[in-house]
Amino acid sequence: MNNDVSLDLICFSHLRWNFVYQRPQHLMSRYPGRVFFIEEPVFADTADWINVHYAATENVRVITPRLDSAGQGSVEERLAKLIDNLVETESIKNYMLWYYSPMALKYSRHLDPELVIYDCMDELSAFKFAPPELLHLEKELFAKADVVFTGGNSLFNAKKKFHDNLFAFPSSIDKAHFVRARHGLADPPDQENIPHPRLGFYGVLDERLDVNLVDELARLRPDWQIVLIGPVVKIDPSSLPKHQNIHYLGPKSYDELPVYLSGWDIAIMPFAMNESTTFISPTKTPEYLCAGKQVISTPIADVVNDYAKEGLVYIGRNAGEFILAAKEILRPGNKGDWLQRVDSKLAHNSWNATWEQMYALMMSTLVKNQQGKKNIAEK
Image (cartoon, rainbow, N blue to C red; front, side, top):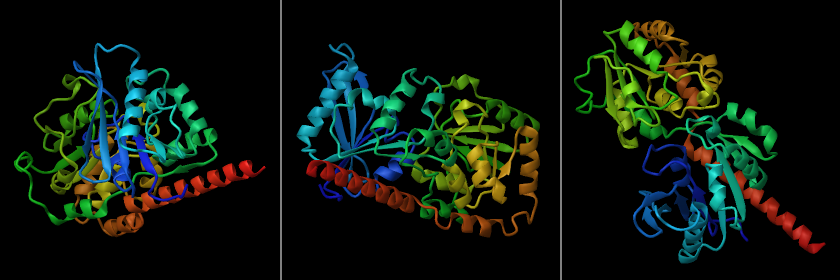
């Protein structure tokens, strides 16, 4: 087996391709061969089948299993059968498996790949509604995986004892995409009438958002506008703070983000300090910086260690500290050489570079495995 693009890549993801464009989409779209991106199933009143459609990038086929809600047999058995049918109909002969969630092992452990990759982008067991068996399955996945990547340095330190071929790959950026925000793009209609100063955040609005901090910040500074962009997930929308100076603009596409970001005066990351944020490495940190926006964040470990210690991001532990930081940012002449230092920090940060390094590690591991099998066969 040659280490080239004759290998297909089957990716199991707990995130849907058309949800929020983030790490899985950036990486899978860069694979040089065929990618089969298998989402979690959708239940309906139809016979079991799989919906296959091409993503915007031609190499990625998005696979959505659709299961009859009244079907016979276990969900895992039916999913395994659908995947076997996919392998046959798409003539998938030599392939690698790439996991984002250990839960997919329940219907894929019977497959026989050339290589198994686990991209541990988050500590999923700490998220709201995490299945109780997730940690047990992750232990199994560590045993099966040939190479493991983590979504940040904190997660690397937490997982390195479980695997001897594990590497940290913190969030990267698409510079050409986000640097456009530095050039004063015209406000979209739903933002153009919001007064300044604007403090903005985009991302999933879930248990990782510190709603109390946002509420107090809005209450203490009614003259500042807080713009929140993104879908509300796993929390009751009625629990979100409501003030005249908080603006919920809903989900936006990846292509739209620089346009909104361009019109903000400050970018904020008001993450709650709880178990769901202990190991996160927010992709939005380098994106905000690339856009030329100064950032205030709660003390997320990877943000503190990777950015704040170099004076590139402000840290606020509460609304009062956010306000002090924002006043400093809004002070005329504040930036100094900050942007130059940001650009120096981000000079070698890109999804292309991240993918190239990951791919090199995958191929070197594949070659090592093949050599090991050859040596065993020759004995």
